[in-house]
Length: 154
Ligand SMILES: Cc1cc2nc3c(=O)[nH]c(=O)nc-3n(C[C@H](O)[C@H](O)[C@H](O)COP(=O)(O)O)c2cc1C
Image 1 (cartoon, rainbow, N blue to C red):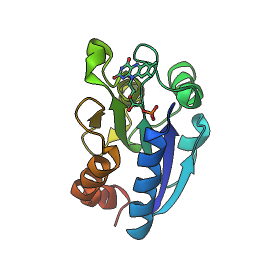
Image 2 (image 1 turned 30 degrees about the vertical axis):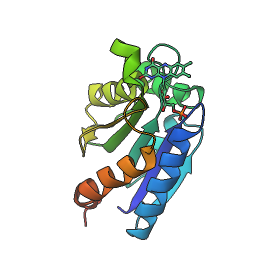
Image 3 (image 1 turned 90 degrees about the horizontal axis):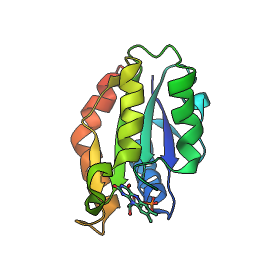
Image 4 (image 1 turned 135 degrees about the horizontal axis):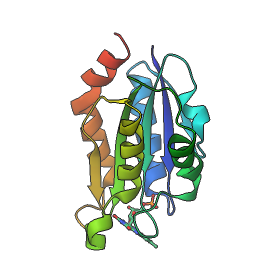
């Protein structure tokens, strides 16, 4: 398994920049990556693949529109994803308090509810603390690349 589906959800572009940067790194590392700018359950129906969610947060702890169909599908028509490997990069702003990184957290919770396997600790990127979300995400990926390789059966 060397393929990775990257499901990105962004309102103003930061999460998309992060997703594109992670795609570049993962491709250099030998993975076959597809970046989805709109995602529904199709992104978890690719055989022999891993799912990487990169989601910003909008509204009051909500996922961006382009990830709504995926979140709704996971909750309303839960697919059989026991053990399915995934990781989440969540972008948010801690000044929003309780809804901090709610978009990524909702997708993480929905995947854990159906017993998918989180292969790396979720990265939360706080817009209050950094103006370089791409750098944070790249460092996170470098620290967790071994987990991606293990999940891919390498
Ligand atoms: C209208 C609006 C609502 C937001 N709501 C939240 C929120 O509830 N929780 C949170 O952590 N961040 C919230 N944010 C902050 C964004 O998630 C954060 O700035 C993120 O980096 C934006 O990424 P993007 O450029 O990919 O959309 C909100 C931002 C806007 C503009």
